[in-house]
Amino acid sequence: MRLKWWGHNQPEVMDKQKRSEVTQDMWDLKIDIEEARKSWLSATRFFQYAVEQDEVDYAVYHLMAAEQRYAMLVRRAKSMKDVEWPAWTRSEGQ
Image 1 (cartoon, rainbow, N blue to C red):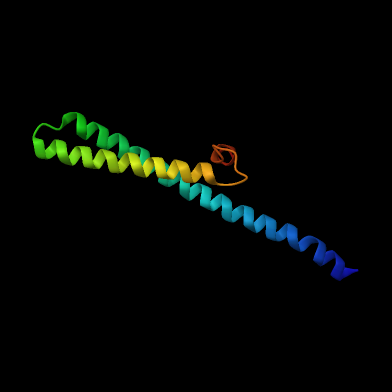
Image 2 (image 1 turned 90 degrees about the vertical axis):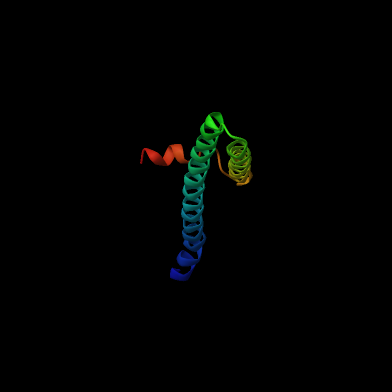
């Protein structure tokens, strides 16, 4: 009887551990997305104030790289299975 009880609850424990790992991955991804967004906004501001040709070239390069990183992270978030976004809003209040 006891072995049956342990065998029955073991998948639930593993599911809970898996959910906590996914939750940590989601939080890490959230932080990366926020940082990428801030970097993108910073690159946009720098581009607006660039004057010389070298500054403009650098600003364009930096802006394109920041946009690509932000888009990549958003695509990664969207590709996560079994996650309703924004997933972190439910956990922030807890």
